[in-house]
Length: 69
Image (cartoon, rainbow, N blue to C red; front, side, top):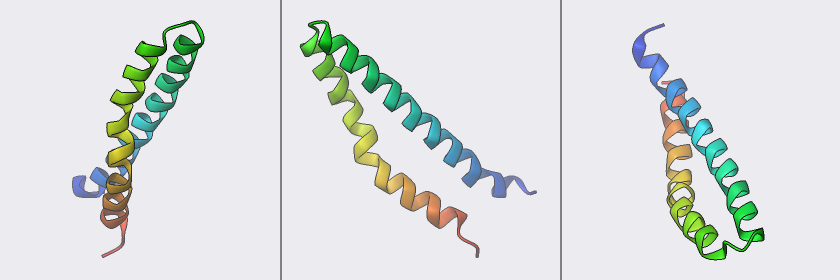
């Protein structure tokens, strides 16, 4: 398998890891908020907005890269 064929699979796995980390961080944010850290939880959620904002573009680009030529 040529290295160029590995790139889309690699990017897909990195994206899956990113989404898993987002979910874990959101769980921690909820936990912090329940213990009175609403400002901190809000800051964390604000930082996670970038992941949400970029997700559709990442999915679309991966689909194009993985489509047969």
